[in-house]
Image (cartoon, rainbow, N blue to C red; front, side, top):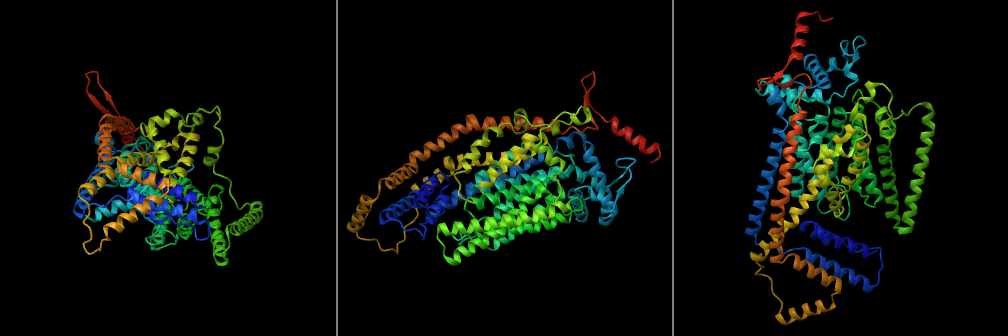
Length: 628
């Protein structure tokens, strides 16, 4: 039981210095184990060697402050640059065609927003629109996800209340742009939470700002539900991972603290907002539920996991049930029941773990207790399901969810078969909407395995589910944008950490070492040398190898060499590819910014014009014909 702990501590050498020192400090031998004195001594020496090897000497306070200021300024500048890039690249349509809503669905959403702004909340949710699906009509207020309309009206009223006169049409055109910036920043926070690297957050934000998989539904004028749903989804994942971060002083116990309850509650509220914004909330709650299940199966169950997920599911489900189009679906639909079963399972596991601790059961008895509770839970769920299913309580999976598991077949109806976004995605689609990020995803996933926190595994869970669903339906490639950006951030951030940040701190510690404590009484040189020699002679060979490798890794020559390699690679490979990636995204953004109702054309003279005949025809019909 001790060797795997030492090996996991060895694997921590690949992480950043601060995280390594934390792991090496807090990895301890299990109290219930009774190894031989030789094995205990070996493990203790290995952990001590790891601790001393991975903790680089602290530089002088002034030098450390200077390095921290430089790194912080670079991080702040890059994050601002990423936000600006996300804002500018989404303005092509507005700069070229003006404040125009795109395509059919955005026009319908804008019409619903106008009705909400003019008639209020109560009238909106009881509105039966006789002009939609004419002549049948449609109860709009109870058949759409109203989050985007409510958000737009709130922004419009807030801006006008503070003296910024802006029409509702202009606000709706800018909503995808503003929320594109917000999703860029929240994805950066998610990348930081899953890697604990500020450089990973910066790199992920730079990619997310311009990646076409996100641009496809967030350009200016593209007033569609996905434009705000991506922000809600990234915020939900970030707050969920943040709730799993161990509070200070409780890293080893896994107890839930104030931060766990706070961010668990916020994660539930963000999920409720996601439900109100887009029908893809099924993906979000299943990713979080699957992540919690994976953590419990991997033996990473803690009190904070149970508290965070319980708050997330309870608050999020309560909020979801308040959305008229959703209702009681979270407790009835087949695709929404797995997260509920995870919620129940965590409560049962908490009871089992409490019994194991109270009775001080060993590993075998503890496993039997958990198995007994698991069997009882399955039996209870099976009995309840057998009782409710014949009564028609459970609804079947929705048609969209069934389409993800059933192979698409041609119907012969051209109107149905021509919907290309319902076809399976191809490798060309991934290359088109992810570009160079598609090549970096495996590297980011591989490097994320070297982490030891609860949040790192969400990258693999998110990637697996998003990749499976997008392979079944091309339109769901939009879900791959955030995870591809996060994996790119992990890969590039790890390179910057180990080739720039760590060498910088190591050089600062070498040439500007921290001042020694003058009040400390130094031992006699003879005794110190004798003790050091005795410790070195009794140290096992692996521990000596760890110390020697770490000393070589921190050597000034090695640090300068790593920085030189980074500069060369950044200049010759990384920067040119980034420019190529940005140019490709800019070109694709212009193509995605073409509204269907108007377009650009060239005269025989070469002059470029904007053809607006469709809107002018609609305006003529509006002004010169009766409403009916």
